Structures are given as structure tokens and as C-alpha cells.
Amino acid sequence: MSLRKRIEKSEFLATVLAGIVGRYLAFCNRTTRWEVQGLDELRAALADGPVLLIMWHSRSVMGALHWPVGDGPLSSLYDKSPIGRVSGALQRRVGLQPIEMSRKLSNRAASRTVLKRVKEGVSIGMTGDGPLGPALEIKDAPIDWARTTGMPVFCYAFSTAKGRRLQSWDQMLVPRPFGQGAYVFRRFPEGVPRKMDAAALSDLRGRLREQMNETMAIADRLVGLPPGP
Image (cartoon, rainbow, N blue to C red; front, side, top):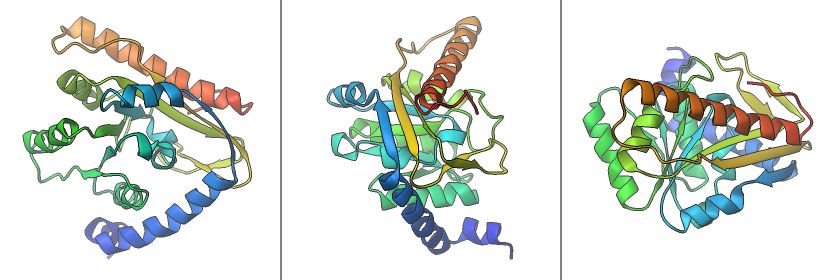
């Protein structure tokens, strides 16, 4: 059996790998000189209730470590892919409350799980371009959850001057230790109405994608890098 299949089937193996990855990322987090923007605005919003946190998949690896756990719990969605299983185990390791989106569950059952968490005051985190891409393209799920829950939407991105890109569909950025880094939270400045026609929905998708890219570009600029995926 391939390693990929073993990870998909074994919570224990995913937890072991998450421990290794988690220790490495925590070391990078401690040894990086971080510049932070938008954290106070996020904390102020959390004082009023949960939020929807959206990030590009390529900039998601540090999100669990940068979330202010003391200001409110977060549940992130993950699937049974190897990266997804390790991500879920890593989120549990740092005190978050991940939700596995099983292919065996109907969309309605998965929705009930998420909505129950939101009613309990738990924020929801997710990647805007999903687990498989295309990269930097907003999927339906973030917009659907914003419409369903009415939660404020925040975008997140991190950047680091010392990092490497994985040979993955999204060129995922992974930090190296002892570098300069930045992470940014930015509130999407408008509410998301429950009912929209196709034109309004397309326009909203474009504006959200633009803010996601701007958030990523700000993080890159803070460490002296040109905008990247």
C-alpha cells in the first residue's frame, strides 16, 4: 500500500506526521521575526462572535499557528487527502477544532455539522481555492458559507523571506527558520446577502478574489518580495 493510501486510512499515521510537521512549523514560527497586520481588527470582531476565515491553499500552512486561539475557537475544514489528514491532525495539536469533510457525508450532513459549530460560537476557516484547485480561484464553498451563516469574512495570508515552494498544484509556500516573515488579516468590507442573482454572485466572487490577492501581496511586500502565488 502506498504512503498516500496509508495516510488516508490511518489517523495514527496522520497524527505522527502532523507531530513532525507541527514541531518543524512551530520552530519556524518561534524563530521568524514576524510583522503582523490586522490582528487587532480580527480580535475586535471575535469579541462580537465567530468569523469566516478564508485563505489561499498556497498560504495556509501557518494559519493554525497564527490564529489567536485565546480570542475564540476555530474549526477548519479538511478532507481525507494526505495533506488534508495531516492538516487536520496539526490543527488539533495546536488547540483548534477541525472538521473532516468526508466524501461519505452528504452536503446537508456536513452543513449541519458546520452550522452547529457556528451556533456554538466557533469560527470557521477554509481555503478559498479548495483542496485541489485551480489555484487562486474562489470556489463556491466560501461564498456559500458566508451567505448561509452571515458571519464577517476575513482574509488571511502569510509570507516569509526564507521559504521554499513545494512541487504541488498550488506551489505551497513552506517557511524556513530564522527568517523575516509577515502575516495579515483583512476584513472583507461588505456583507454577503443570502439571495443574489448570477451577476451579483459573479461580481462578489471577483471582489473576494481581489481582496484575497491583495492580502497576499501585502504580506509579500512587508518582507520585501514581489507578489506571488
